[in-house]
Length: 322
Figure: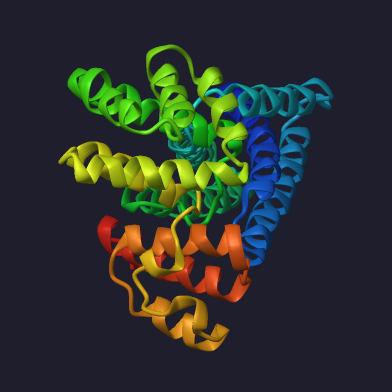
């Protein structure tokens, strides 16, 4: 029988990564947009814990000593990962999750080949189980990222800091002319919009934490009115890019009026009628507008779930997942 030293090393690496995967899944449950997604993430975490036990048993069967350090390192790695991600937008956090799953998938595939070469059928079966699990998770994360690209995400909510970071990144990428001229023109046109707009510029030019404070303060009643007034002023002055950026901000904050939603007389619809209307929407931005509005105003879980399902269908089509 072949030397199992390399095989054992891969099992140890998989044990560490799987423990991290479990903790990441448990962290993500707090960001689930619906109960269905929350249950799915909880199940993913429980499945990862089960895989951790299976890997540990296999290590012991191959003569590996009981490992009490690796689980702690895995949990610590997940905590550090989650903490660092709060400084970046949600899509970067999801890309990091996807990178972790790809590494797990690649190592599981390598483990299978090693086990086949060593003629260890039980390890081969374990590797096949790992490959199947990580393939499914890679597909799921790919769809969630596609949702984000289409205007979501629907499955996961960004934390407050991640939403701030994402907004700051978009603002920082806008042309200097927009920052220096268009926005300043809007600011000068209305005193009411000055605080919110100036805070936005400061965030793009300075740091995300400054913008975070502005966003948190903007949760007051005057925020919505200020942003709406700024958007109207921008449209009146022909600053289309500025107006669209402000409209997108209002949509992401759930600050659109019911009359601005893509569904006529939305506030008059029953839950059933709203669900039917949502299922007919084809635009990711329209679905996002409904989701944000529901979260901020009505909070009807069945409507949000319907919008999430529709957005997920669009995302799957975009990435070629059936």
